[in-house]
Image 1 (cartoon, rainbow, N blue to C red):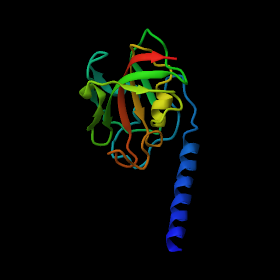
Image 2: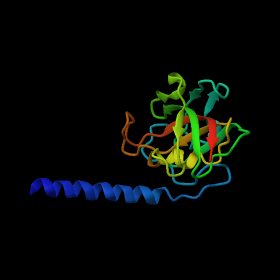
Image 3: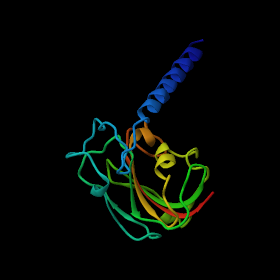
Image 4: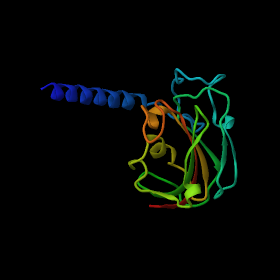
Length: 183
């Protein structure tokens, strides 16, 4: 009987967390390609809140990028910035996008994943509803084939309480190349 009670308590806690995350994700998008929201608390970074221009990325489309994390404070905003504008088909809700990407964690500036290293792009079906983090489902919309985009994903649109080798409440920094867009 005790196990059933504990299981129910854990389930209620998880569902409450999902509800809170859903509320936090309802911020408005501003004209600068950033989402307005409150500043992330508990950050060890100093300075003013980060903006897209604070992140330095080197490398051309199709090449593995180098991402330099700035000395600013991460925010609860989804930050998007096209580093190389694409000229092909645009990612829309429901599209399939084949992408190369690199992930660096904000807090420790460590590369966590890179499809460039594997030499194998990642295919993302049904963008907007795909089985990936919310930051990708929201942040890839509007990216054009042949384009390179910076995505700075706050914890509530990333891995939240952690997982897949990511620490809890981690801000994720991606550079994503749209290799092919269909649909």
